[in-house]
View: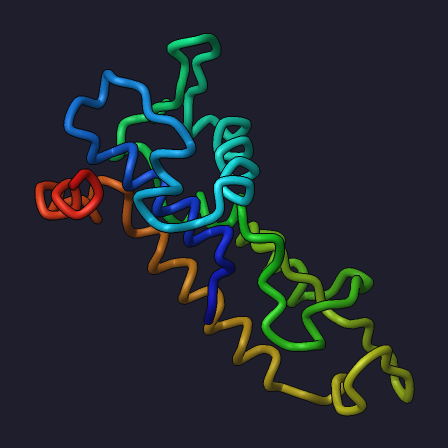
Length: 171
């Protein structure tokens, strides 16, 4: 399993905002980008989406900036990742829209952005063995387990070493 840099930077931004020495003070995107050595323009898109999703509050104006809109204990990592990852298409047969089937229903119930390839006898839009392949169910099970583990943790859970993180971020 691998997350995009987008998700990585979103998580890092939330960590940054959570461990600020004075959480009432506003941060800005440049501070976060500089702390991690990442692109400010790329981070701007991420911060915007985190604001739209209600994780970050933006304050406009001369003394404006950003801060967490929720307490770290209220930010579930699995929920966040499902909201910001563009898809979880681990293999080709996860990548093409399909007609409704049991596997797709399972993906929908798990709220995972996964689609499965259309499977008809003697016709496949992707991999030739897709209609008979059982590997995709193994991958789907692994993906579901991955998300289930993330859903057991909140932002607060990964801040037990808050002082150490703050020392590294705010030197």
